[in-house]
Image (cartoon, rainbow, N blue to C red; front, side):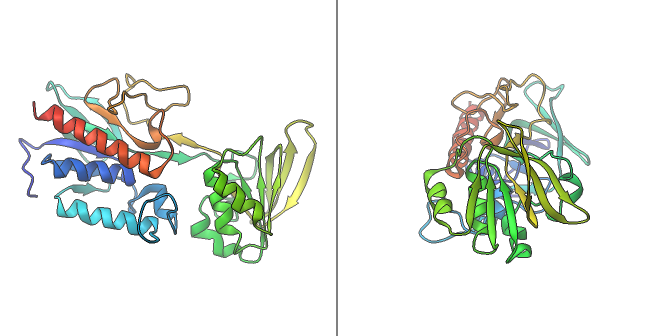
Length: 311
């Protein structure tokens, strides 16, 4: 690679290949810092890569998550970032002062700075029957699996942006889309208005999924009213749960402070309790949830690291 490392020591290792991680790696490399990016999955872009059209990305025309990620990956190659498709097991201090060890199953990288950008995973539904029917009617990607339910009845579980976005993807395909909401909607007004105006989308309020029904494939869900406890059954062929996320932070040292939800606490420069470790995106406490927010945090972290290492 064109950026020269000293004694096989990286200046920056970015953990996570979502849009935030890709941006952080690109900015660091552009500032002349030897940079590696580690991503367990073969596909870069994170959850954004499953979105057909990004409606919260400032572009002159429509762009998909895959197109955005591929374009950024090309920039990484042009800027000599090493992309390594391996899962990070741990980040720990090295015996050599001022260095960190980033351990995967196959290797250990030494680096001066780490950017934790591993994002968050979608929370599993947890209701009886859900795990056994995953891939057999239970899905968390409408863009991937929506066409399997063309002309059928589907259920979306959740109240946030992701749930309503998925419902809007499914609405043109499915015969009906029922959105199960436990308390109140937390989604953007634009999504709520679009869902409310779709003729085949309806809401079931104050309810949660008590069980996913089926034998080999999904045939319905059993709903429970959170106030009265009364149960009812709703026939459907697909269940799409979007009930929040869990931050991917297990690889970070225990000394890194986290909030009550497990997200990493940082200062306004994205620096964690360990000044050599930065956190951005969905695993960071206070993250806005916006794609542009992840990109902005990546730029701040990269600028801070460049300033640190130039001293």
